[in-house]
Image (cartoon, rainbow, N blue to C red; front, top):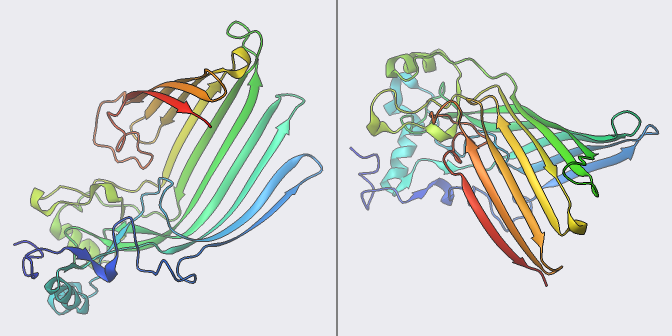
Length: 335
């Protein structure tokens, strides 16, 4: 029987608290106290030439950096042995009778502290080195160890802290066989995400009995939102998106300048070594016909050397962008 068959229209047509998926959480967009961010930034430089900043931000979680967070929350069931008598289950039935799915889109406040720095080393490498790192506190993740009234669709939520960062470099380099008049800018970055205290998961949580015992024992297993189960697909469907403790992304690129900067070729390689070693090759050429008219030609090739397997990488190369190689032509008029 469909979950919302008892609703007035035979289906649920909205979420709890008038929330809208990926658009409006349970807060007023007109109330400054509920819809504001606050931050502090300290900037300085050392006598040795190291420029750095110290940063703090209190923000509504946007989830736009590749973190496999949980966007939907359902009322949690605490009495696993007597679900029918649990207050959350009773509350969910009241919502369904009004055509409301017992779930809401969440955008919690997250506290972020961070450091950034750069240093131009001129004597030996003639390279600018860059670094950024942050700690995010209180990011919501799906936890298969927590039971909700929508447990066949949406697990419970656990708040976790994450360490994220980037190290990079920029160097102007002469490659005279390719360009005798101008140097190339060589740039590279290494990004990482690390989930602090990420629990291990048993391999049999697709089995309902094993999962029930796991929940009763207070187990914890983080799962991503890109492969939540479909109850109509039978046992074993869904819940394959185990949240990795580490995620890593690296890229390197080169930018050239010809004819006084009117022709700018770019080539880059991006790789995700943690998720089946997938990546992307990009080349592009910008041609400024006049200072007001520019033409851009680009090619993006998404790579899966190990085959098109079901991989749920948060960076998107092996999931969202898999099979989306493309060629683009863009004409820009500036006035």
